[in-house]
Length: 472
Ligand code: URP
Ligand code: ZN
Ligand code: ZN
Image 1 (cartoon, rainbow, N blue to C red):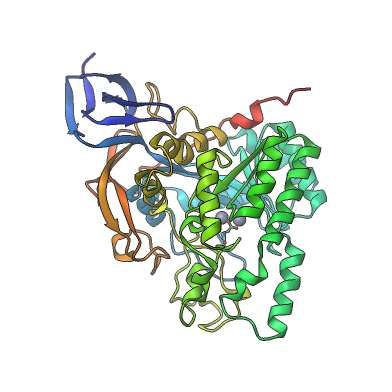
Image 2 (tube, helix red, strand yellow):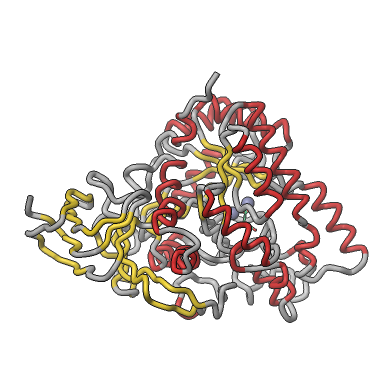
């Protein structure tokens, strides 16, 4: 076969199942050939000595999401998708968030306006369901699911977002009926409120006490409850941003019982600890996220659970609040009690290199890396096989990795619009160098090369877990 737009020659191609030396032929934005040797292209990229992986799919990131506390996310779809691409991610799935009392369809329309003409790489939307009234359940969600918004997040905490158990059951029952995928933020809201009040009553309001307000028991209880609600409604769920031993044990217990419980973790639980919240002055606020990072032993448990298959998905949970900013971490000042600090850490660009270092250190295979960061994500959220793999017929979303390059992470290297990275000074081995989205080079040898606005919206099909029927 000849007449390719592009050939990537001599690379080692890695998928979730294989590792093979072959050329990749691209035409019309798609992979059209995989063969030992291909000829006849307008452009040839020599990948000798490099690995070629599917572009990452970030199944959990926040971009330009309206906030109820007056804070503002620093990354819109332009800077957020640029940073994603520079970190080897070619598909992002941020969240269109319903405001309580309002239509969820209008939240989706608003979110499209925020994305239109800005994204460098392709994007889909999850929904966040905060107010599942009859109209939302009977009309809006079924219509949205049919239109390609097939996954949604449910919060068990945060006053402006959380659902009670009965509401969660309603939404899970709907997910079952309509074939959608529910993601759950599992922390017990009342316990957090009670512990926060107790800490505040004794003046313990510095950032490090954020971790004390959200101990592992709070996450364990909510994880167990979410599993029970999933079991009652007989619908798969995915527990997001799992932080450590206690929640992992609940998920393993459920998986061992044959329940369809999926799980996600994030870089902050591999690289940060609660001690980082105690950094000098207000610096600890940079690492405030929920659930909070735990300790070194828990980091090891998360690495082990990634390797053993407890987790299917590794996401960034990029939450881009600037540190030195009156609309960011300092919205209530440089000494504000931890409860007023916007939650979340930036990480859309560092997600893949931080996990890849685990491949370099022998903790994970390259196939596991691809599964966790691209293939499983695309399957679970209805984007496979267009995204998440390297296969004939799929989009040519390809990343050429230099697996031997050592990089010390520092914020000035990154392309997000946040004024810090929590991973400052960490050295990793392996870095994405050249990134293609639908066959177009968007990052060339580490330098941005694409045109903002070229990214396309991706309607999602039915998620793979929702298609599998439970045995009677
Ligand atoms: O602290 C976090 N994780 N913030 C982002 C929002 C969320 O709950 O995922
Ligand atoms: Zn969450
Ligand atoms: Zn999040």
